[in-house]
Image (cartoon, rainbow, N blue to C red):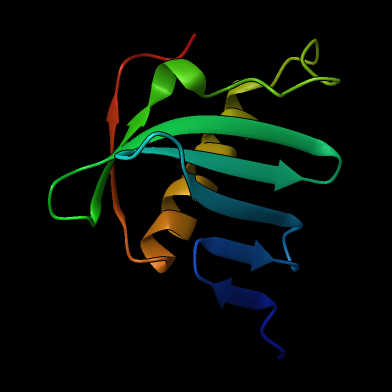
Length: 104
């Protein structure tokens, strides 16, 4: 069985399940986590904590697609899958994700 997971600094690609994740700095210690699934993208804000491994994910920025798919609703089951994929990918990249806030 071939592995379809590729790792680069701040980037996680899972071709088998059809998604990728990119972590970039956004006004450090702020981080932008971009989840991509097909043509759809979702940006989630995170904040890196003092040890540079723990990250807080702001759930208020999670759970909706970016334009031009912003009007599409995401079912609760799919939202859970996406959240688990984001946390798993961050763990693979060496981060420990915790959540703050509530989903919109």
